[in-house]
Length: 253
Image (spheres, rainbow, N blue to C red):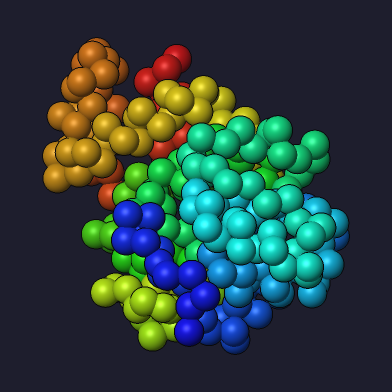
């Protein structure tokens, strides 16, 4: 039974499955400084406290939930913040590298993932609950219909793995969709040879017209004179993340 009633406008579906919560937290080293996105009623937060992380910051847009967690003695050493995660500057929260955990609000999960990419060089591990459809897109490979913008951008900088599919009955209230837990582990890629913003533009432009060959999909970049290479006869879903890095450098240089 929920202690705080969920609010639809925040896309709240509180995790109640303790087994899943434990599996999620066990993916981290306890020496980690960690950010929990959307602690809700504290199911995941309880396991974070038990594992004794070096520093725990929990952010929730719903002041009722933050006030509830603050009222509990076991959460007194946690940095509890009532704010919109999309407006927070992560660099103000942690001096060193940190990791992220959370049951993401499904209505803004893609926006949160793009924010994670912005801070990619400060983040070690991300273990998050997502709508299964979004999770499947992130972990999909090229030549798949599910393969897309997030697949390429995230796989460029993170190793990705699905940990578990989670039934809707593991939440209160149950969402109308199935969910998945995925793990993103930062890889060694630091410099791809072009600005990330340009790389993201190339990837987005390619997939926004994914049925077209790249020479047509990328016309909005006004680079027609560069379209003589064989790669422009392919479609976006045929390119790996390494191909997109090469393509971006080719177009930029």
